[in-house]
Image (cartoon, rainbow, N blue to C red):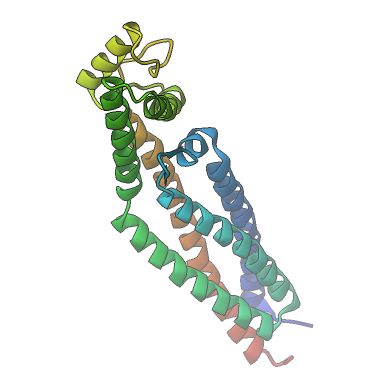
Length: 240
């Protein structure tokens, strides 16, 4: 015989929220793995030119998201089992895990808000440095550096369907392509500059991470409340 009345209702509500929490962990893990292996981002973040790799700040948040999703699935299972078994020990452990996860999520959210433009700016700066190197080398006889820079820019342009840093440089690059000096713009031709494409690509993904974190935070708050209420109900139950 276990808890009765409202506490029993709380027990099943906690089980329900924990099941949702477990599913959310699976979804976050899946989304994080998709972000990690998405062709658009991976093609750009794995680039290397003149010994310098593309900025990997974006991957830091993705790897954190992978860890959070995996931990959420474990903690969600622990909460479900603790609720069904009406175990104060498991519920107490579950509550402690939730508090730690919530604190980590708040800290990660603050860090992400403070650095939300960093990922795009770092990638734009990397693109600009390669672009300037490619275009300056176009006017010299250093063919090896020109070809290396051009190959990196070609990946940017083909992946994002863009060309150049702005409208002027886009026109200039397309002209050098037509003159046979370079071959870096997409073959179908485009006037969209790469700065805006890079910003759109990473900003959209960062917003996706933020929405997922907000949903999880709301679920966590309900779970912390229900787990404490159930734990107190079990402790005060005459059966125990």
